[in-house]
Image (cartoon, rainbow, N blue to C red; front, side, top):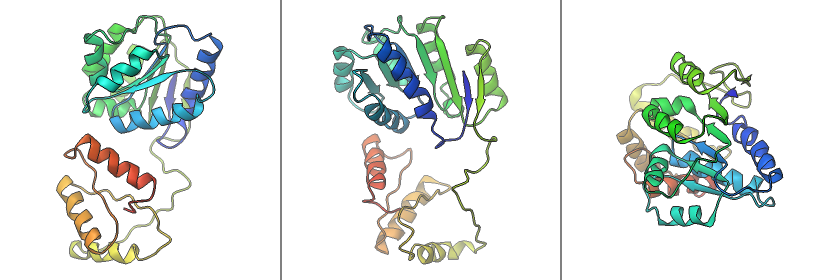
Length: 254
């Protein structure tokens, strides 16, 4: 199956709920039956949280594995026995090479955010994973965009797929109101502080051009007593996760 839909349109539920139902009805055969491959630790954790909720009363067990942290807790979860594995490519291949993971009995393979996988240079890892899983399986391929190289990858993995497109490619979801302000560079900071005086703007996500710019802006906002945290690739995994958690539970406003 080939799914083309933007982030935030419910893709996780679209593949997780039918997967859980099928595994629930199949008497929980032993071993990993479904592999969900994602590009980042953050997405890994998010999908894991969704599975916690969706599979709560089913007895279908899952584990989340990713790099950047010690492997012991992840290996322990694998040893307890799971049907669904949610993983980033690097740690998956690492633990498989160490003999902790067998994908020989896999029935379902989900490649989530395939376009980001390619952007982040995971194509070789994806090919390595394909060699470890059975040729006879159901593959579910999800991507927010469909550039030529993604179509090529999809063609190499899928056999006569059903194609489901939820929204036109790269359009904005209806719930977002857009506006643009033309402002001199030196005045951007003041405009931002002015906008943030509005208490109705409870939760704010700001994109900056550079990592340094993100750190600098977070400092400026905190000086003005606006709770802000920066998140980017130079931060440790734990710092990034903490920033996301604080943002989710509204401890951090920006």
